[in-house]
Image 1 (cartoon, helix red, strand yellow):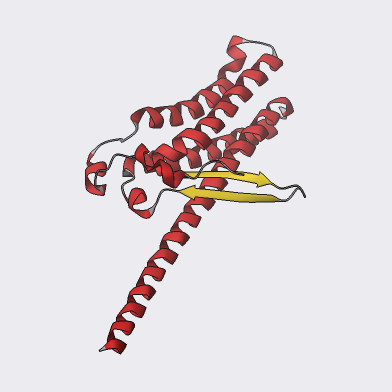
Image 2: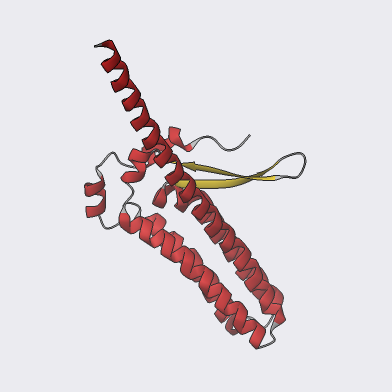
Length: 197
């Protein structure tokens, strides 16, 4: 069984209108800070680790730990707060993998702050691009030890990017399907009233 459904947890967003939420610079400034700080800390650790320690093992452990912490923060905290989305992957008894998505209801999604959303999505994409660039540099320098770190980072950041992108598309699809269902039910109700007259 997956984690509890997020629709029951809508109190994480204030009950303001979309206009009021977008007048505020950030609805969740601490979440936005840690969303970016985790990424910056991991990249700085990768770039500057040689200044503090000559040991590759220590550099590997520290950088990988920071990458893992960033993955966890994005997946379990900032995705919910900044964009109202959540994803996970279930593996059944047969070993088949299934993506699971949750999002706030459409009214709550409409109240998501634009700045929160912007910082969430752009930092995800820029972080991925930065790790790919660092992997290319490691290949060019024939520095295969540090290439391993970039591959780990690309794997985790790509998982978050893919998970949240699929989750956003699923939320949009459900919102559109809900709108079409509402319109068709109105049409059927109007037709029923006309038949009664």
